[in-house]
Length: 133
Image (tube, rainbow, N blue to C red; front, side):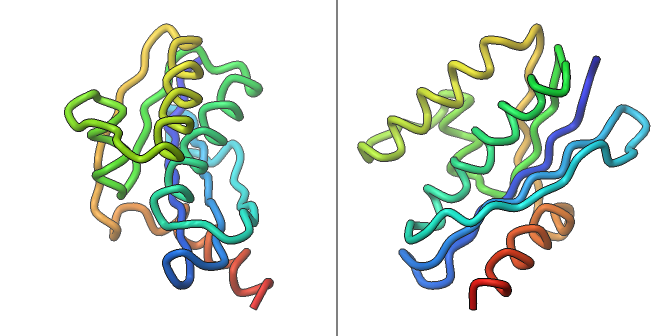
């Protein structure tokens, strides 16, 4: 089964209260699963990584064998494509988690998208952060 994964992470303040948002769609674009989770205090970049790790894990739980990942974090996408170095220790740990999950799929694509194309995942983040406010 193939799925499309849209992820977003955000922190109000940097670092600050943070959340992740995940939207998983089938090939026809129908939402299969969507959710947000509160992460506590962390940076935007950590929240972005937590989101893709969570989404990759959920895709596997749903039975996906191939996945197209879309995120508006250029940092996360470029690091996972191995175009940019991962220097921060927290990010290195999350990179390894995401990388290991990606290896469990037959095929993975990683695409950076503009914020305007990621509104559903962003909405999941804001729902969680608004509840915590």
